[in-house]
Length: 79
Image (cartoon, rainbow, N blue to C red; front, side, top):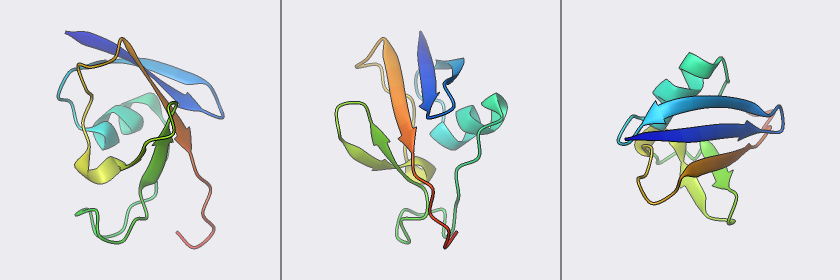
């Protein structure tokens, strides 16, 4: 099953397979998401979904619960 993933604020859209790691989707789309520990502990990869849910991209994958995932990227100068 294919889901449309849209990265804001640059409005980059790419199709992804359900279960595909979010960092892989972002990389394929040419979108940078900062990472640190790659285990979700450091919160460097924190992004926000359209509904306000905050997730860590390094431990998240494309969900079958939506037809489209809209992801708001944070700009954190620390990372």
